[in-house]
Structure formats: structure tokens, C-alpha cells
Image (tube, rainbow, N blue to C red):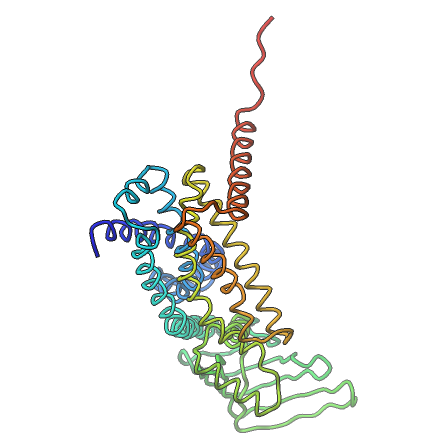
Length: 402
């Protein structure tokens, strides 16, 4: 790799890192309320907050890496063309395809990074995040159960404890269970122990030597039941929601787990379209890094007259169109309207055909035609909005005094 190739590669990686940082920070904005609630209500430490952000980062990177690849490619070659560096590169006698060699190397490196995040970072981060949140919830359950104070933190349960012997042991327990409104229960026990099950995200309360009082409005009778041991599941609202999120999002589990679920559902005769789409997405989304990098270079050269801000606007339009197509294809594949494995690759196929078209045009130095008209229209629209924004900020011209 010669000096020019290293220069192009260095410039692309610089813009790529800036774009990753900016887009990741933007996507983290919706997590700040969660962070504030965890700090205020549950006493989460600064270290635990950093761990939460770290474990959430793979799910964010799975989207920001392909986006940043396109931004890096478009912005870098936009600046080369705007500062006449592109003319100097062409004067060396190298063809456009030859100048794309460092872009291809860059796309391969980001493709490998995206695959690592999707297949290893995402499942590991999701599992670690689930365990950390569960530990926080479990500790809250152990700390907030105070003697002789009604506790209503649990779903459909009111808990009263006479005495706490330790973090997990209690005496004199009174529980009002309203999980079945037509058949409410009152449970009284002499002792109780709290056990947690991280695998199922449940907190178990093991009661000893007690009585269950139950009234059935449907049967119109009242009965009591004595027990030596009774296990009761304590469902915190957060843990229930966490379990739903952790187990229902197929993209956050490994490919092997998706295949196991698909095999189990196929044996049961149930549809597997959604899981097939999730499995295909694990391969299709990283592959977009290759396409975005090669597609962005000729687009960046073409959009040079609009400057850096114009190239950003063009990136936003392309990203919006790509992800709208991705969501549409995903929904079509999930309901079985099209092949679930092919559905996630349709946006990539469109991007591949378009990328080959603009690359051939740039290599042969042929006007873009329709693509050029679209690019010019986007640049003109951006310039109009930019000028309109400036005019509204400046306000009407001042009046002259008579």
C-alpha cells in the first residue's frame, strides 16, 4: 500500500471514528432517562452506570457502524473533490477503480468489525446487561423490605414483615395477593427466605409454617390451607419487563440460539418466519458496510459543490431510505409475505446495483444521468433550506427613521 492509499485510508478512519462517536451519542440520548431513574430510585453507582452503557453499546454499534461507514466514505471523497485533491489524485494516472483500493480495504475492516459486534458482542452484551439489571433489582428487593412497613413494590402483592433477621431472612410475614381479583388470598407465615434465580429473572420467597386464607367470589366460599413450606414468586415490574425484552428480541441472542429456537418451533409445527428474518439480518446488516463504503466514494465526489454539510444531508437521505426499506422488508418477511431469508437482502441488492452503476459511471467518466439529477435535486433542496433558515434568523430588514 503506497502513501496515497494510506492517506485515503487514514482520512476515512478519522471521519469514521467521529461519525461513530456522534451517532452513538445521539442514540444514547433515549437512555439518559433510564440512567437518571436508576441513579435516583435505586442508588446505582457511577461504575454500574458505565457498565450499563458498556453492555448496551453493542446493540447501538450494530446500527452506527454501517451508518458511519457511509458518512466516512461520502464526506472523505467530498472533501477530496472540494479541495481539488481529487484532481491531484487523478493526475497521477491512477484510475477510479485503482483509487478505490483503500476504500475496499476500509470496507473489509469495518465489515469484520460489524460481524464481530453482531455475532459476539450483541449476545454477550445483552446477557451481561440482563444480569446486571437483575442484580440491581434483586438488591433493591432485599433492601427495601423494611420491618413493619407495607411494601408495594411487587406486582399484585402487598408485603408486611415484622422482623428482618438478615438480608434474606424474615420473620412474621403477612402477604395480600391480588393477582386473581375474584379469588384474593391472604398469606401469613412465621418465617421467609428470599432466593433469586438469574436464569429466569425471578425472585422466590420461600415461606415456612403458615396459612393461606382464600375467598372465592365465584364459588361463594372461604377456605384456609396450612402449609409447612410454600414458594411464592415475587414479580417486580422492572424484572417482568426486563424478561420480556431480553427474551423476545431475537437479534440480541446468538445465531446458534436462533437456530435452536427455529428447530424447536418447527417440531411443534409453529411458524419460524420472524426468527428466520432475525438470522438473516445478522448477515445482511454487516454486509451493508461493504456496499456503503463503495457506494459513498463516487457519491462524495459528485456532491462536492454542496460542501461538507451537503454531503451530510445526502447521507441522511440515503440512510433513511435504506432503513425504511429494511423495516419494510423485515415486516414482509416476518409475516411470511416473502421469503424471510431473502427479505433482509433486498435493500442490499438495490444498494449493490446502484453502487455498481455509479462506480462504472465514475470509472468511465460518464455523467450520472438519473443519479446525477437526483443528487443535484437533493443538493438544491438542501441549499434552499439552508438559505431559508438563514433568512428567517436574520429577520426583516430594519426600518429607516423618518
